[in-house]
Length: 259
Image 1 (cartoon, one colour):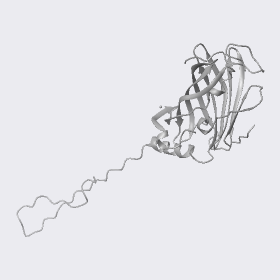
Image 2 (cartoon, one colour):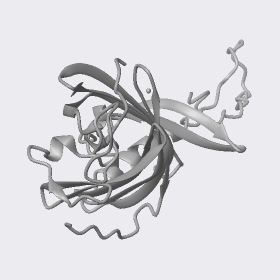
Image 3 (tube, one colour):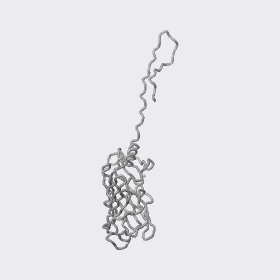
Image 4 (cartoon, helix red, strand yellow):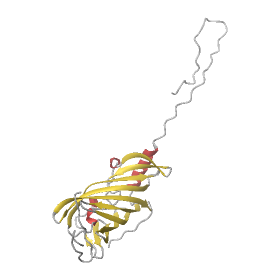
């Protein structure tokens, strides 16, 4: 990696800098008009037509979609993949992120993305398989990510465990079709992926992903903001990553192997 603002080393680029940086109406009973004086003939009571019962309103389709989404993303062995692009914003520059790929099979995760820093590009790949994590910067060898556990997962729905973990934002129209927006916490690109040799102690401090889902609860697309921090040459700084995400192959098998 290169150091921020330094020369490349070991064939891996370095980041330039990191800065501070979701009535029953009338019963069918017959109503008799007020009784007048009694006569020998029995007055026939005129029956008023009964009103139709008020229909019970149907359940909000957005809530139905939300329920289906929760059941889908918390199911054991849920597989999917997504592509993404965006940028990592810092004090004095913006680092474009392109060719992003996220693959998830149950708890196993693969993330790959290309970062462009001061005109130099480098592809970084991360894998989390069987509770163990690895990372690879450019042409360098795979390295274990010690201390990187399930709580650090870059899977899109890793933080969804209970209904309160999903906030319903409401319906939205896209191309004439109705979809529904939900908000969750998700960090599909952890700051550890930024290829800077002088960046250390990377962590995520906050994250949100606004996901567009269909009537069946299937994720379609999303926008994500991941806020983190790390030490750049010893100085603690903020990192903000913004991404546009498109989901695909939802529910289709994905195979992820350890390096």
